[in-house]
Length: 220
Image 1 (cartoon, rainbow, N blue to C red):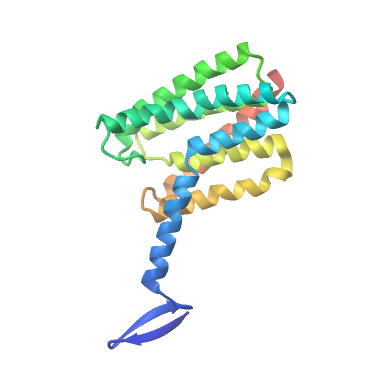
Image 2: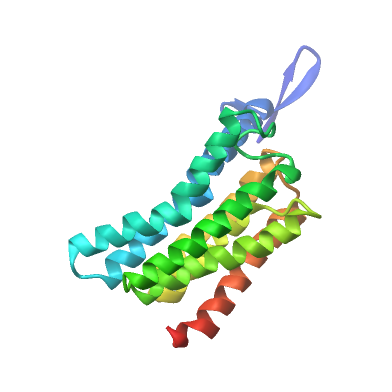
């Protein structure tokens, strides 16, 4: 970094970029991370990874991927899209107002519970059943907290799949865990959450998922 004099004032530069340009670039990077790391997208990627590991028959793996993705990720997204289209929420796709998150959480929880029952009937792998249950339980806790405080769904939605992947794949999945601090940084950068809110979201997502996988895993 160096200081460059412009019209009697000093402007910080980083290589060929000014301080303002660097701020703009980091803000755009944070927006991109927020989009790429949307909880439904991370859920689908996790479902693909776990299904591919647990199911040897390609057609059966695809069937489980489609069904579990529909209940865990697609149904909540469709409902949020409906709320946006009918102007029932004003906070945008991020649902910036915590009061608007209650109904989407309820729909997501209900969808996961129904999906869990369907997947049990289909004899889905243990990893997929546990993942579906984790989304239902974690969503319930997040919904309760959100009534009082705007905890970060993005952070929790990154921590849950990261914890699940590390639990099932071991150290081979540790690289994926870097998504959690990246998402936390991004949500603070775009001013959607405070440091406390993303930290608590990541903590809730990690601890609840770990507890469920540890305590319920042997029962499946």
